[in-house]
Length: 160
Image (cartoon, rainbow, N blue to C red; front, side):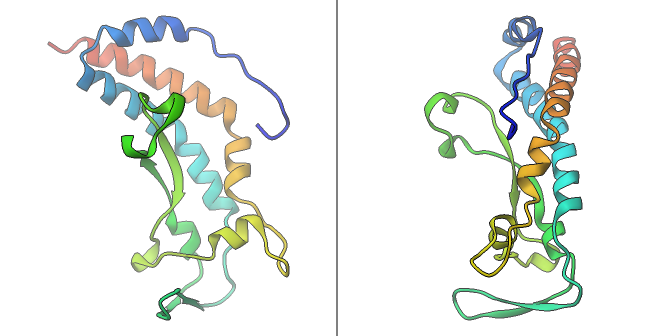
């Protein structure tokens, strides 16, 4: 949280104990389903906050290729994805993770300028859209994750 605040999550020990009772495949489904559900408000807010060009523009890629794109490309490129184990390290190496990222948007075009919008340049002020989407939804993400994980544990715990 950018304001230095903190939040307390109650009941995680109970959820963890119940999660341990599921086999690994069902536990993974329960966790990733909850992460996916929890991140939805972040993606929606990031899309709302993403700059939209007033008119069509050109993207020039490092290889020299130029592509004309319509306004709204950046918004269509904001997505959720499961973080592969190969990208996790340290304390997260054995966990499950999902993230919000900028991928290819409309017509498989990658908006390589997203970083300049988010962080600014020497000639363009920053117009953050990803960081505020996380910061403004921290508590909601935790609540949604906890709720959905609890539901998934019950759902998958009932399976033979």
